Amino acid sequence: MNELPLLIELQGVHDGLRVIHRDLSDFPPELAALDTELKTLAKKLEEAGKALASAQGQQTTLTANLASAQKLEDQSKAALKETRHKVQFTAAIRELDERQRQKAAVARPLKEAETRAGTLEKAIEEMEARRIQAQAQFDELHRIFLSGHENQVEAERRLLARKEELRQALPAATVTRFDRLIQHRQGRAVVTLEKGNCGGCNTRLRTPLIAQLREEKHIICESCQRIIHDPQRP
Ligand SMILES: [Zn+2]
Image 1 (tube, rainbow, N blue to C red):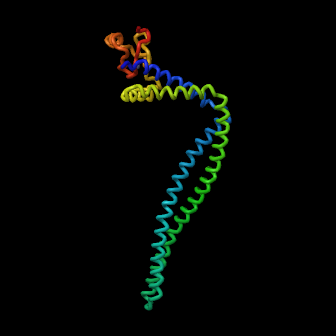
Image 2 (image 1 turned 180 degrees about the vertical axis):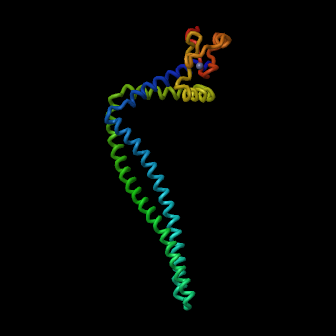
Image 3 (image 1 turned 60 degrees about the vertical axis):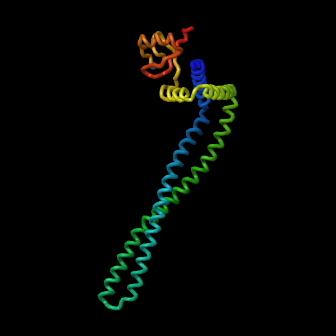
């Protein structure tokens, strides 16, 4: 199977889609501002969500610690009531003091964690409300924007369908290699021979490789691994 014509066409489809995506993301100022705001909000919401989860985790731990401290304090109070001798009484008072101090040491950070969680919940609620509002505004303006770019939208639909057909027609290993090149080689997997150089990285090709290109339909650049073909070749 000669994969080359399919690969050349697939590269063309990628090039076409890149141009269309550039046009379709060249938003007018108002739409661009909403797009930026939505991205910022999404990031802030994610951060606030993590901070809230952390504050709630602390709350759970500190609540358990407070319950233990309370139990110890109650035990000390009960012991104090039972105490009859003066010496023992002083010791029991001291113990109760210490346990009350320990309880206060847990209660303070718990209060802080509760406040923090409350503030975060409120901030998340406000950001979420704004996000929904901004998304609705964005969708509305985006719909109008796309209706003014019907040709590009239609061309994109056609190219995406063709891209899928070409991918189905090629062996899976070839598609994998093509995708890797697209990803790591600035979106150019298939290039032409340019006066003895690789049309992708501009490296001079060794003579045996050029000779090979006369025999075979395409070669692999030794420098950038792109697929090179010679459009001059009959
Ligand atoms: Zn190259």
